[in-house]
Length: 88
Image (cartoon, rainbow, N blue to C red; front, side, top):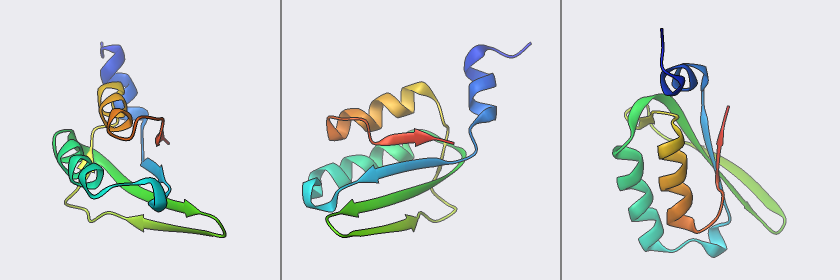
């Protein structure tokens, strides 16, 4: 039997971060990189940048894949002080 966390991890196919570039600091981006590297796994990561009048997506390289766990979500959301992570 799988633990609940293992079952959750296997269901997640992609991780999306929704960020407004006008509200993101260089320090937060550095912390994001370290946070993502701290939760290595199999899920690709897409950063969706949204601002007034524009929206674009950046798919991170295949070398940066994460485990779609509740702990990862909490750690990344904490960097930005709000919910920015969605699991698909």
